[in-house]
Length: 348
Ligand SMILES: *[C@@H]1O[C@H](CO)[C@@H](O)[C@H](O)[C@H]1NC(C)=O
Ligand SMILES: *[C@@H]1O[C@H](CO)[C@@H](O)[C@H](O)[C@H]1NC(C)=O
Image 1 (tube, rainbow, N blue to C red):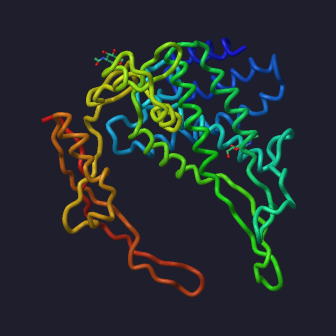
Image 2 (image 1 turned 90 degrees about the vertical axis):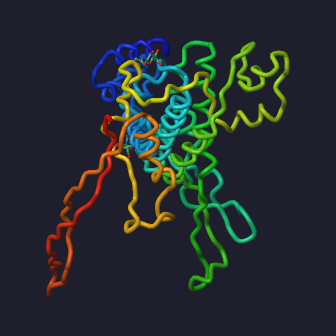
Image 3 (image 1 turned 180 degrees about the vertical axis):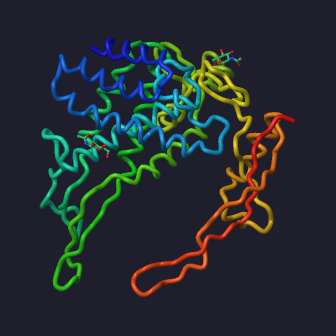
């Protein structure tokens, strides 16, 4: 059954409309799955929404990086080289799909699934008991695992790597769940609370995965297992220590070094950094600590280090200003024009 899913995605990789095709691919995959299980068809919209959500979060997280999550990353994600970037794409898309499936389930969008009420009424601690509607991550995890892990048909290094990174994505969704509580008792005395667990904001999940991307570990594949790449390169015979195995479970892993992404490469769908905007803040603008250091160094990273120059362009932006409240009930504003500098990478 899953072999057919892979065929659909491969067909899609030839399409120009990569993202749409990915989504269609999923819907078609669901049609194929319909033969096996009718239930899965009802999840296809949710899965497509999850994949889209993951994609826009990926673009947000990599806004100031050389590799900025090009549109084909998702549709080709079982075929592109297993680099650090692809490890992120695997984790975030699996997380995105698990996230939306779980949310849809809590919202009552699916007939066969609802909130996790298994502990309602039980005491959770000294002064609180389980209540409300906990997000049903077990459901989201199970279905996303069937779908996304099912895309890996091989049993080679790449498949094992992809499955590992998918699992990292799912773990982050589960681990970032937050407990929410509501007070009860005489006039809000809060002598008893009811609590439930809910998913974190997807931005939180995206940011954690971005950190994991920066800490990703290069691995080798030996005798059916992933082992720390550093271990094999320094000592062929050395077995992996328990430490490095434990570490790998939490870490994103990749098999191949990335290109520098300075230049366009149509095979991997990257456009290079020429023409990209970067951020540079003059003294009278935002103070340094208001700005993310990563963003602040973006001109150096995107332009200078790729052999491009930073071009400054003055642009005029129109904003609302001198706003006044008028009785009743309007706000009247003037249009003000302010000059702003933008920086882009240009050929020397
Ligand atoms: C699930 O959630 C997504 C995004 O919030 C929404 O687009 C979709 O319509 C929902 N329902 C189903 C059945 O997928
Ligand atoms: C583009 O990327 C592919 C895959 O990483 C690589 O094999 C090829 O050499 C690259 N092409 C150029 C022109 O850099």
